[in-house]
Image 1 (cartoon, one colour):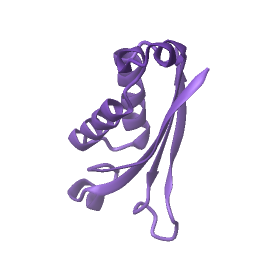
Image 2 (spheres, helix red, strand yellow):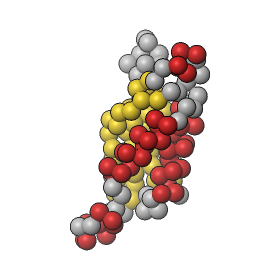
Image 3 (tube, one colour):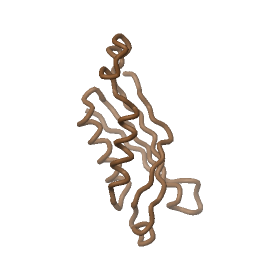
Image 4 (tube, one colour):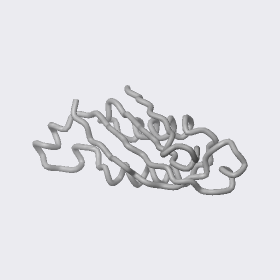
Amino acid sequence: MDIIFIQGLKTQAIIGIYDWERKNHQPLIFDLKMSLPIKAAANSDNINDTVNYKEVSDKVIQLVESSQFELLETLCETICQHLLIQHPAIQKIQLKVSKPQAVTETETVGLIITRQR
């Protein structure tokens, strides 16, 4: 399986369980790996035969910025399920999210999930 990836996608969200997190947008940084066959796109040289990483990036930003989940787990699951539904060619997604302002004593904390058909 081939991989289309997006690394370091930056956005902001209201996310978290603490009062201060519910009042302030926080930066989130996403890395995605989407496994799918790309041979048809390579042969046709047509974007319609693959997954457009710009469209995926825009959709992830839109989903994140319009959400107000308490847990990263819920946000990540929502993103993965949306991408699997909207892009049937994707067979597997690995999504990593970093939340750099969550714990002041760390560079970042976060979550990595993998979902597949």
